[in-house]
Length: 114
Length: 117
Image 1 (cartoon, one colour):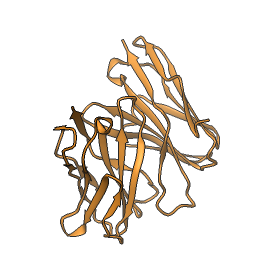
Image 2 (cartoon, rainbow over the protein chains, first blue to last red):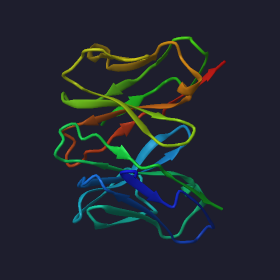
Image 3 (cartoon, rainbow over the protein chains, first blue to last red):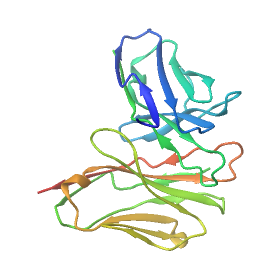
Image 4 (cartoon, rainbow over the protein chains, first blue to last red):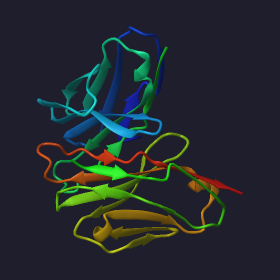
């Protein structure tokens, strides 16, 4: 079984709809992250969480919100989706106990907003 | 601020050719980590290597090798005798240690490698 899972894997929605992307991990890591990937732009950080009570904005948080329901779960919401939020979304986890803090990525969620 | 530049947007080679993917980074921190990830057509991100700023030894893993040079702020990746299965987008990433509370990775924009028969 995968250590970091994302649901759904693919989603097509319409402008104005509320969408939630979910991420679960079994690695026991305390830190979790949401990134989006756009062609030619690499991955950009949306939000990150260092523990259940710690949520921080990344470089492109406008239009998004998150919820850390438990150490193992970190959800990303688009309150009112717009077409330029069409992208590939990745969840990642890392262990604060590791100095190098390698991040482990989920398989990605491909979101299309029409 | 930290930045990672992968100037090569796309590279095409014929199988068995050697290919080098360039990565140049910027940071004011003296302690940092550099990473390479592979993203095959299936979309997932596959971790390839991690290197810390105090270890300038080059590394070889099978057909893959990495050349880390602090003097030029570069962490280049070479694939020897490329294969079609190497076709993917490759990302270089930087994590500095002392960036406030952030433990985030800064990614380059990626280099798409196409290996043909």
